[in-house]
Length: 105
Image (cartoon, rainbow, N blue to C red; front, side, top):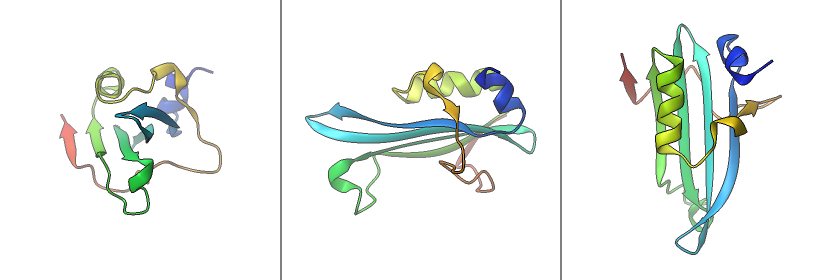
């Protein structure tokens, strides 16, 4: 089953990874989940040196009415490849009950 089908079933798919940016380790989490008829996307980025202080470079939770628009947003706002998204087993990157900070209607 591909990740699109998993999203349509309401499963949260995502990835957590690190990259080098400005000579430092930058941790990022990206996830998407269909929840109550909308697609919720979460993206965060934090330098490893600022994790304890929770000083995020990015902390986005946004709603979309279209899966393609949501996936496009991920591609434009994260260095995570869409094909790297996988079903999260036993854990979630974000709580879909939280209100989005922005919507795309």
